[in-house]
Amino acid sequence: MSISSISVLDGRYQHYTKSLEDIFSEFGLIKSRVYVETRWLRFLLCELKLDTVDDGFSHFLDEIHDKFDTDCALAVKAIEATTNHDVKAVEYFIKQRLIEGGYGRVQEWVHFACTSDDINNTAYGLMLKSGRRHLTDLLREVQEKIEQMAIKYKNVPMMARTHGQPATPTTVGKEMINFAWRIRMETDALEALPISGKMNGASGNFNAHHFVLPEIDWISASEKFVSQYLGLEPLLYTTQINPSNHISAVLHSMVRIAAVFIDLNRDMWGYISLGYFTQKLKEGEVGSSTMPHKINPIDFENSEGNMGIAISMMEHMAVKLLISRFQRDLSDSTVLRNLGVLFGYLTVGVKSTLKGLGKLAINEHVIEKDLADNLELLAEPIQTAMRLYGEINPYEKLKTLTRGRRITREDLNDFMAGLESLPEPVKSRISTMAVSEYTGLAEKIVDRYFQSK
Image (cartoon, rainbow, N blue to C red; front, side, top):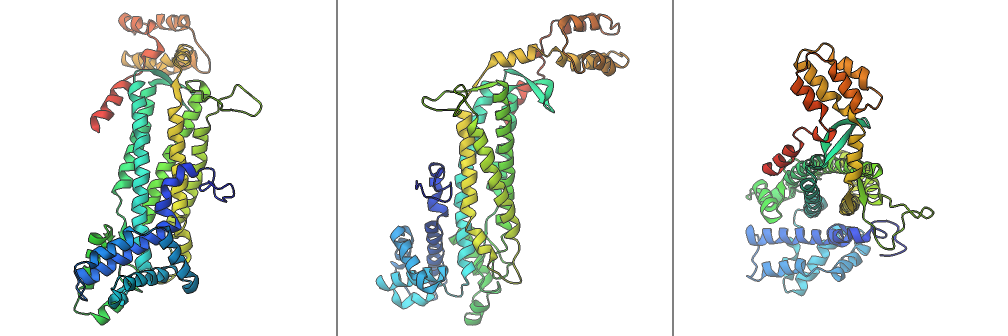
């Protein structure tokens, strides 16, 4: 970490985001471009056989990429200092390697019939796939942690809150499994989205390709290269640039994921505030500069803030990348360079939530007391039973008894004593019923989740 870093992602939170460096850094982008250029060259000469090369050529090209390190990236940047064009610098770098390796004769096949975005859009597609894999691995880790909590606490009754007010009881495990399901569904959706790439020239029509080699089916060749050599979804309908619908779809999916995490963070924050969860002490930590007793829910707060930044960036990028004047303008280029930044904020957010969940311990005493102190929560089963047995105006009668005030067991029993339509076995059952017993099928719903996996 550098103390002079401008971005928190490279400074304060570098320990969270370091795993993204090889994917989204300048080095990562250049290396991805080198990969696309060398794969294209291999496709032209070894697949389409547009020139003659020896059996060692494919291995030589693989080594250019596989052995690409920071010194190589700096060499590309040195070339760019002269060309003032980042993709052209990569082309010249590869040509130098070909000359040094004894393959100078085929150097002009490098970047053949390509426009810069043929290289950039596919390079970013590869980076996006790697970034998505990194993110989904983290999401599955959080999902698993929440599932473990759901199993552990599936039969721990808890007072629910709707509109912030006491409501029908649930269980801690059931509320946790709600979030596990939401994260699971959104992660599945994110993983299923196609990531596309185009390789079709300066205005998307294979003009140069077809002019010099009209006998080749360039549409089919392009689709084969993008799908089999790069592992992306082939895209045919473009201008000079990939219209980025695939990136927009991925970003909108990640917006939903970030929103789910904000919801989770706020609920955990609230349960800690209510005392339902305590946080494990860590030796040496300070919660407040002036109040020694405090253990603040800082991990959930940290995650919420970083998820908010990520959402704002993703929403902007998802819309901006869909818009380009005529066949191409350059406004997308500078925006795309921030793709790693939004993955960085998402990563900080997810890891902070995971850290926060790891500190939690349930406080069953507080949860039990909250249930016992809110006997009026039994108004729902009582008025529902009254409906079943023909009592007139059951809701209104319970509203008069319970709305806006606490009631005692004596209040409840006196009320039921005056209900002639309610059978005695039902009255007896309610009179001894604890609020903590009124959790419906919460436990079965948790079990059903795991049966569906």
